[in-house]
Length: 321
Ligand SMILES: [Zn+2]
Ligand SMILES: [Zn+2]
Image (cartoon, rainbow, N blue to C red):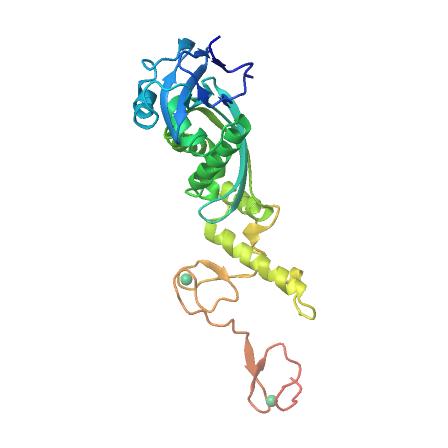
C-alpha cells in the first residue's frame, strides 16, 4: 500500500498545513484538492509544487528536489527526507489592529479587515512558512497581522492628522496599494483592505475638530493648545494667582466655536483706519505708532499744573476747581 499524502479536512479559513511525516517514499500518492497547492520543502527552500489532482511521486515529477537529492542522498534512495507543505489558495479574511502616528506624531489607533489569498505558493512557502518557521494557520495569521500592522504604521506616518481623517478613502487606497506590493513580495495577493475604525486621543480629536471646520490654522490650534497647557499648569500650582479662568483663550477657540466679535475694546488706526486692540502700541496692520489715548486737561487756576477737566481739586496744590 503506497504512502498517501493528503490534507485531511481542511477548514475554509485554514491557510497552511504541514504533512507530519518527513520521510517520503517514491511512489507515494499525493492528493491535492481544489484550492490547494502542495510544495516540497527541504533545508529552508521550496522545490517542486503540485496543483490539484492525484500525483504519484517519482523522480520525474519532482525534478528540482531530485536534483538536490542526487547530490546529497544518492539517486533513488527511499524514503527520502522532505517536508510536504499544503497551502490553501482560497481567499482568507484576516483582522488587523495597531497604533500608529501621523507626521505631527498624533497617536492613531486603527483597526480593520483584510482579505488575501496565496498567489505564489512557492514564494509564500519560502518567505513566510519556511522562512519564518510558521507552519500552522494561527502562526501564519499572527505573522501576517504583524507584517500588515508594520506596513500600516509605515504608511500612516506619511500623512498628517487632517489628511488621515478627511481623506480616508485616498489614505486607505494608498495604504492598500503599498501593502499590495509588500504582499506580492511574499507570494500573496491582497484582495481587499478596509479601515473599520480610526481614532486618536481627545487632545488630537479636538485639534482635528478645529482643523476640520477650517476655523483655525494649524498654527492657531497649536497656540490654543499652548495656552490651555499653560492654564492647566497654572491651575495645578498652588498659590498661583492665576486660575484657569484667568487665562484668555482666543475667541476663535471657544467651545461653541461661534466666531463672534471679540469683547475687547477697539481703536481706529489714524493712518489705515483698521480696527486694532485698544492696548496696541503699534498698528498690527500698518505699523503706525499709536499714541496713548490722551484725556482732556485744563490748567489749575492757582499753580498752573495740568489737571483732568473732571478733577474737583488740583492734585498738586489742593486748589478747589
Ligand atoms: Zn494702521
Ligand atoms: Zn494746582
